[in-house]
Every structure is written in C-alpha cells, then in structure tokens.
Amino acid sequence: MNNSFLCIGLDPDPEYLPHPHIPSFLQEIVDATSDIACAYKPNLAFFEALGLGGMQTLLESIRSVPKHIPIIADAKRGDIGNTDAFYARALFDIYKFDAATVSAYGGHEGIKPFLDYADRGIFVWCRSSNEGAADIQDLELADGRLMYEAVAEEARSWNSAGNVGLVVGATWPEQLERVRDICPDMPILVPGVGVQEGDLEASVQAAMDRRGEGFLINASRSILYSARNDGYAGAARKTAQKLRNRINVMREAALARR
Amino acid sequence: MNNSFLCIGLDPDPEYLPHPHIPSFLQEIVDATSDIACAYKPNLAFFEALGLGGMQTLLESIRSVPKHIPIIADAKRGDIGNTDAFYARALFDIYKFDAATVSAYGGHEGIKPFLDYADRGIFVWCRSSNEGAADIQDLELADGRLMYEAVAEEARSWNSAGNVGLVVGATWPEQLERVRDICPDMPILVPGVGVQEGDLEASVQAAMDRRGEGFLINASRSILYSARNDGYAGAARKTAQKLRNRINVMREAALARR
Image 1 (spheres, one colour):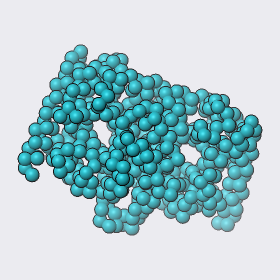
Image 2 (cartoon, helix red, strand yellow):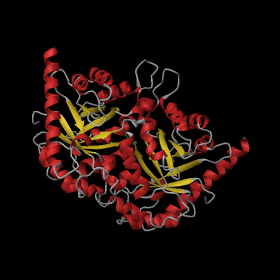
Image 3 (cartoon, helix red, strand yellow):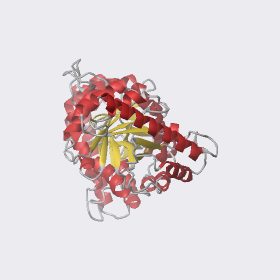
Image 4 (cartoon, helix red, strand yellow):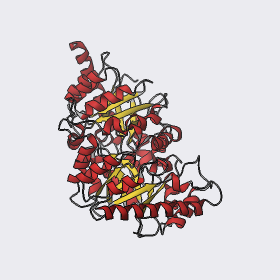
C-alpha cells in the first residue's frame, strides 16, 4: 500500500487542464505519483462529458497504473437489480475496475449484482461532502437515526462477502465518526479534502479503524492542478507527497492518543 | 403526443435480442412504434455494458426517432454539484437527450446542474418498482413521512423552472397515489408495467393529474421482445398498440369516474 492512505482522484476538468491531451496529462500524473498513492479514483462524469471517446480516454489515462494499485470507478451507479446487473457488467467485466462507488437508493436487491463480484469492492455513497447533502442524507428517521446512518447500517448488512465500504465526505468529521462507529471494520473512502477543505486531521482520526487502517483520503483537483504550467507533474508529486505524509503523521498521532 | 401515454424503454439485453445488430433491431422497433409512443427511454446501463462502442450504439439506435418525440436517458445519475455539472453536460450537451432520470441523494446542490438546463426534463428517482426498494425508500421519518415522500417533496421544491418530474414504479399504485398527492402538477414516469406486472389500471388512475395527463407508462422488455423470431417488429407494434389503447381506455374510465 506504499505506506499511503492517499487516493488520487482523476477528474479531467477542461477548465483547468495544464496539458490539452488528457491521457498524456493523466498518465504523467500517475507516473509521478504511483509510489505515493494507495489508489486512483477516476470520476466517470468527467470522462463521459468528453463524449463518445470518453471511456477510451479513461482507459488510456489509467494504462500505466501499476497492477498492485486498485482503481476505483467513481460512478455512483444504482438502480433496480435488473439494471444494476448491466452497470456491474460494464464497470467490472468490461472496464475491469477494482471497485466502484454505488448509490444505495434501490436497496439490497438493487446493489446485489455489484456485491456478487466478490473480488471487487463496492463503496456505498453514504454522506457526501457538498453543502446540499443534508437535504436528504440528514433527514431524521422515526427511530432517531439520520438517513445516512441508516444507509451505513444497510451497507453493513450487505457486507457478507467483505467487499463493501462507504463514501463519507471529509467536510463533516462528526458524520465520519458516526459511520465508523456503525461500521467498525469497513473501508471508508473520504473525498472532500483539498479544494473542498475538509478538516484533514479530524477526518483521519474519525475515519481510521481500530488498527489505524481501513480508510482512503481522496484528493483530486488539489493534486492534479497543483501547477498550471509545464511543471504540473512535479508539482502534483510534491502536493501528493506532502498530503500523504501529513495523513501519516496525523494517523500516527491519533494512534498514539488511543 | 400521438394520443399516447406509452413510453417505450430501449433496453437491449443480449440474452433476448431477436436480431444480433442492436442499432438495426432498435431502429426497427422505433420505426414500428413511433406513431404509438409518446417517448422513448433508453436505459444507459444496457448500452454501457456493450463496452466502448455502447454510447455510439445508443445514438445509432435512436437516430430514427422523430424529432417531436422526447428521448429520456434512464441514467439515474447523481453526485455532488461539481460532478453533476459534468453528467449534465454529457447527457444534455453531448448526447442531446431531452430528459434524464436522476438520483436525489446529493440534495438540491447536487441536482442543480441538471435543473439549470431549463429546456430539458429531470425525472427524480422517487419510488422504484423492485422488491428491495423498501429498504431505503420506505424508511419512516421522524415527522411520519416515508423517505420517498420526502424525496417527492424535495423534488417539488426544485421545480421552479417547471422541468422536474418523478420516477415511481407501477408495482406500488398506493405509492403512486401518494406521490401524485404531493406533486399534483408534475409528470410521473411509471416503469414496472409489463414484465414486472404492476397493476396497470390502478397505476393509470393513480398517476394521472387532474386533467388526466402528466404521466408516462413505460414498458421495455414486454414490447421489445414480444416475438423472438423475424416478426419481432410487427409483434412489438401490436404489443405497444394494445398497451397504448388499454392505457387510454383506463384513463377515460378513470376520468369518467371523477
């Protein structure tokens, strides 16, 4: 795992690209960071917005990711089971992603086709990092739980194959702590560090499991677009290195406090 | 609208295809039904599962859909706003779909990039037709509402541009009735008729608005795979025609009962 809990998000935003050819740009980012990242997370929306060649661009972009580093498709797919069987086929059989983010709204029957790939990972979208997330995710249930807590409990109940994790934004460390309480042993993918300025230290402490593991801190734009000039790959490496190290220091400190 | 409330779902399932070339098959289905359907609904999962050429296949498949018939991308997309801006760009700018189904879990901030396309339609995934839907969608809130009712109320509050509708499965007419009460003027897309055997008569009565309009009954597999031999286009036409007529008769009867 490169002694790293840093996941690097691959979100090619045309507005910020320091290099016009996306696969070359992202390959350079990957090459400059593959000894630092514990995973890569391409966000499918950014590739789909490129048009018909978008998924081809994605595949080329991740071609140089070393085999031992998992690639998580950030896709937030979810529907009824009959449909999710095809989404799972696309993400896991065709594109061979190691893991994918999914939406839980269709319930267990909806998610099951993803779960059935026992050698792949599922990250259930639980509590997101945006301001508006509370509209639905913080609705209070009759039994006192909040919506995202109920989703976390559902996700735990779907984890019989041990391949289920959760997505919980870093902007809300207290929610992260709640989810860790509910799911003590499941991996948590934590976006929202970096541009979205989640509280990193609180997030690391809240997200790690009892062994100080089981979490991935994701940063995308803050790494990819560290420099807008020719030095972008070196700059991305430096930013990634710094963040990886900060996470490790915070993690050690949090472990020492226990 | 072809005096029709029938939406035809385009779900090319390799297991059932009566013709090996998907675009030819779906074009024939479209040509055989375009005077009967009020909309077409390609389900993106089925095309994504075809691999890199999947979206090209989709575009070719819908090429002969007459301009006046809207095409609804069944995509259930949804994330935080920054990401949804790219999903919206893909679905509306690149692929020019007239409408799309979306997931509400990211709240208003997540959905807003879709809403901003005021000339396109959004159908918010509210209550689905699968058995497992209740896991999340029927959770009871502290104020007595069920989760899907809260989503319907959120969707109503997002409808300032008049371009928001809902997806509510036909397998649960009582939920359809609740959503129609909450959103008296918003269009409701109703899957789950046909193979999933929702109660058509109860669904039509529950889904229609006060003028007897504002709903689309979707059938996919039951029409596409009406015949597994060379007569598939004619058979699809007959099934679609019969369903379109049944819906109209039920609608007239429900209007007369009022």
